[in-house]
Image (cartoon, rainbow, N blue to C red; front, top):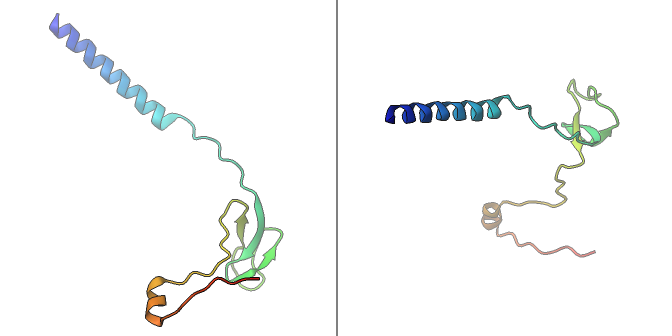
Length: 95
């Protein structure tokens, strides 16, 4: 009787491992949400914007998309080590 319980437990464990592995590897990935492209730009000339993908007119290089969900940083970043080495002081700019 003890051997039968052990065999059933091993069989159940193997089936459970098989199902977990199958679920992990063979389920289709979730569909990715289509990202909205704001514009296309040349990485070497980022201030120039284009409406469609293609080659850069300046360099033989593909244009890169700028997506709406990407973070935009409109500030200047100065490394704290450089600030300390230069003795630089910063202040807020007011309009």
